[in-house]
Image (cartoon, rainbow, N blue to C red; front, side, top):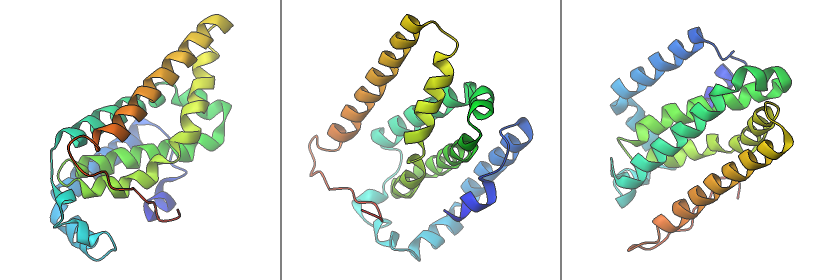
Amino acid sequence: MILMLLTYKRKINKHNFMIYLTLTIGINVAYSIVLSIIRLTGYGWYINSKFGGFMDMSTILFMVVRTVILVGCLIFSKKTITRAPYTLVFYNSAIITTILQTLSMRMHTISRLANYFYLPYIILVPEVLKTIESYFDKSSARLIRLSIIVFLGIYHFVYYNHAAVGTVYYEYRMLFF
């Protein structure tokens, strides 16, 4: 979460995207250093466990879906931030999450760390939805809302049922729960 102290007020613009892109490339190049840091945390035991794998189908699917959600939110970022300035921190969190998700392609355990940053989507997605609905009349806005609810419902179903197929489903616990 220390990353959020450095980025939570960063504007969403081309210059900062280049910084984020450079950061993404840098942490992927310095992967062994990131791995050493993870070994020092409570998540270190995951590295040599069955959760330490890479490039499995679920990791690839999560990367694709989470990137789609980020891009969908970024398309409406300017108007959403203008309408609700507090969403800036949520956009930056979503970008950081995607950066961390690129590392999870190399080791699945990192996606567990990245999950903390997905919590702001609980607020960001409805705010973006309000922005999207402002472009349409009421009946079209309802259709868009329903489509997004169906998409997220399918994502939820696949996410929670994928792990249970053919393996033991381990309960996921976050630090605060």
